[in-house]
Image 1: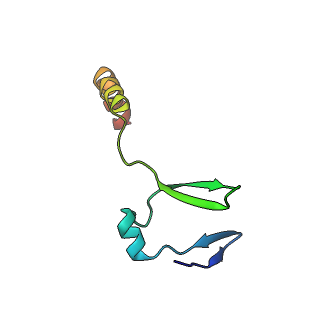
Image 2: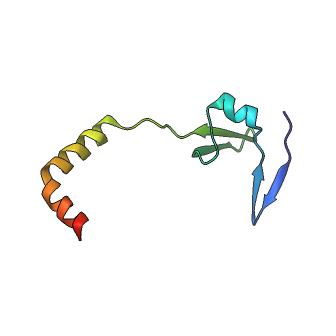
Length: 77
């Protein structure tokens, strides 16, 4: 599919058709990484992973359990 590069303020943008967004599982507001291959003159759009790091989730739960009373006191202020 051919798309036109559009000016968006001082940057540039490319329209992604709604059908293509759906096929890629993307929605308006989703974050993506842009990977530029300068030698091949290619731009690849990669969705940012929506999975939660289980180690981070575990650490967060332990932190909350350990400091729950202090966090609740801060929330009341």
